[in-house]
Image (cartoon, rainbow, N blue to C red):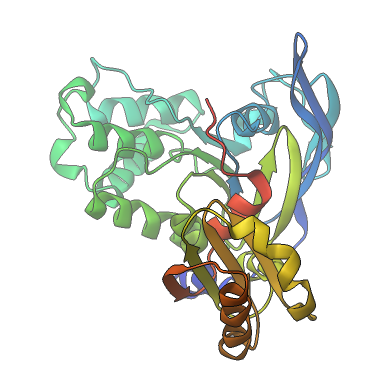
Length: 328
């Protein structure tokens, strides 16, 4: 599936039907509304990056989307059929790899993959075949006879993902699949996720914005249980405006005070921001505009400590939409 992998990198989106649809999903825990009327559509065969700060409602949403948690309001449809939490046949086309590593400590890698296959009604020979295929795909073939408790944390993470794939689900949910992995393992998992594009619909949560850019056809950002944006990576980054991002660090933390003096310089396609001591802007004519901004800074008696220019990235949009405050 080389073509699918290349398409995943370039942000290509399959012209396919919607396989997963959520309408006005709501979940409350006492006075806390964890998910607040969230609606989204996931296209067949795409990789969707599901992003948000800690406590944004990502895991609660994922649990409702895969049928592990009953929503207080709204609905989930898979292939046009309503998914009901706990219904036996509903989750059979779904694979889930949770953020917490869930393996059987006293079973070997081969045994637990075969067991998972049998739990999904695969014939014994087919379960054994899938176990061998996945052990090789995730670099665990040399550990097939090792108990899971003897594996390193990174190996257990890879096994955790493999367990969600034994029955070849049509929809795969991956919650922080690269947490705790070394660079080599991260690359292996990334390439495997890419290889699924076109055949398997993947919804992946991650705090790694760079990783989300590399593997996702589209990304959505949620916060406080609400959907903030859902689009291709490039379209989401365009919310910052066209052109490269310029960051000017100022002495004395006066960036916000300068914004009113820059309004006259604003034109279509220009976006200014002030975070702490850093003044940022994007513009298709950045170098030309920079000279004017530096003159304003000088006229206002401020002092430039550092000037940087770089390409916009997903993290910039994420911070713009969700803020810089720390979350529990």
